[in-house]
Amino acid sequence: MPSDLWDRAMHDADHGRLNEAIAMVRMRQRMKPKDPEATELLGLLLFRANEVDQAIHFLQRGVELLPNEPVHRHNLANVLDRVGRTQEAIRLWEDCLRINPEFVLAWMGLATACQSIDDAARSIEAGERGLALAPGWVDMVRNHSNTLARVGRVEDAAALLRAHLTAHPHEA
Image (tube, rainbow, N blue to C red; front, side):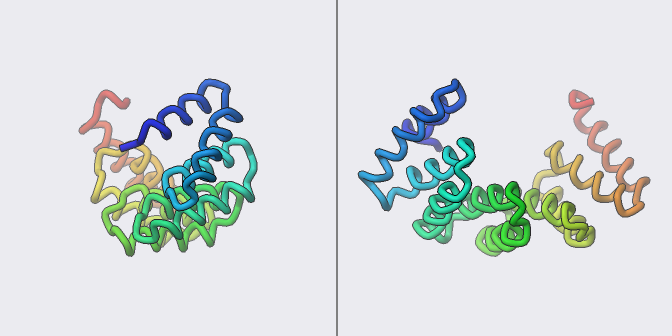
């Protein structure tokens, strides 16, 4: 559950006050350098401000503060993947899944990253594991169907999409 700090900072960032949000969270992080929430939040906000190196530093620090919390690894993996450090991101998502094999966001990240480096077998495996945990998650369905289509399994991709739309007609 996000705290008041998280809510306020994200609200400010979402409403054109990113610098103010960063300043507020940076102050909290300086006062409480071992606060994992402030540390991670600062990393995420710095990434939004395109301060990539600083963002990665604080996100890595968040992982160090809570090494058994997969969400911190997932957020760092997302940033690394978005800046082209996909292999590092894949390792972090795999770490997330060793910590919590049911962490569906990590399955999605892993599937997407493997798709981006043309590792179809790993992408398909991750997509299937993620879909087993969250069969109605439309993003996972789309991602997995794209991977299936890319490897020539067009009928399987179409069947997956049809089954999803049958179960969730409001998403048509």
